[in-house]
Length: 129
Image (cartoon, rainbow, N blue to C red; front, side):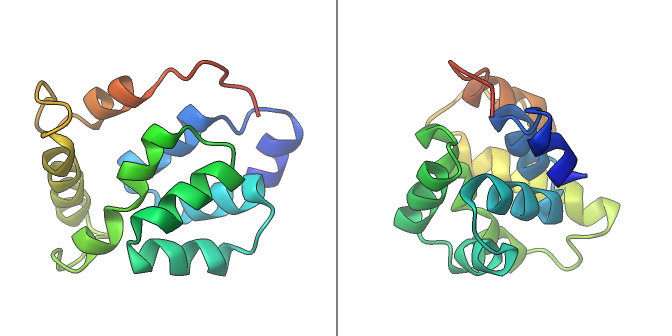
């Protein structure tokens, strides 16, 4: 599916950001890897590392806005705190903590609403692949 979206020019930064903010980490990794031209395992390792410089490098390679880097660096820290991130309860906890981790920069984020974070980081000037 990611390859098809990419080929049709529909693998946009907003779609990729949405997958991260809604805890679709597999899709995020695959999509970022496709846009960056690297293996998904490299993206997975970068996210697991939680390094901000690595997140910035990923965003540059995948042609994602720098504002996304702050969100890319967070998942590794959150995964360790959540018992089952693949369950509904785990995804909700992940989203809540992701929003809280960004609240210092965006104080008006709405708890439990990943769309409020997505709205702060998107739309991007050019949302084409």
